[in-house]
Picture 1 (cartoon, one colour):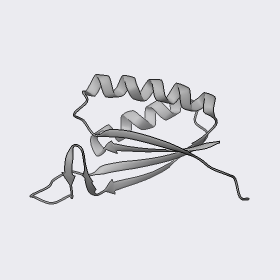
Picture 2 (spheres, helix red, strand yellow):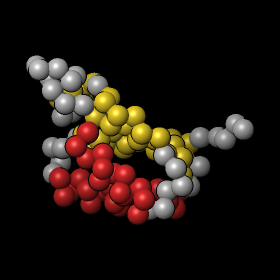
Picture 3 (cartoon, one colour):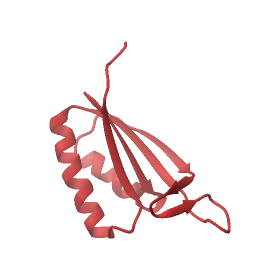
Picture 4 (cartoon, one colour):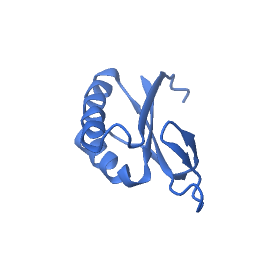
Length: 96
């Protein structure tokens, strides 16, 4: 099993939620109003650096990650590569 972190421009959060539903993801965690700096610049929620990101976390089996990766690539292509959308995965172990 893997944990997938998706950091998206706040304006794309609804698109990502719909994508997760399309992939039959059983559950996810959403953290809105994430502030920081990345390749698309600073998003600090201020007048000088407006905007914010949304962080999604979801634990998935590899076959689900493959489908999600395809949908993320399509969303990135639709919105353009300059829009904030980045995803990472790492192995996890269920401790409960």
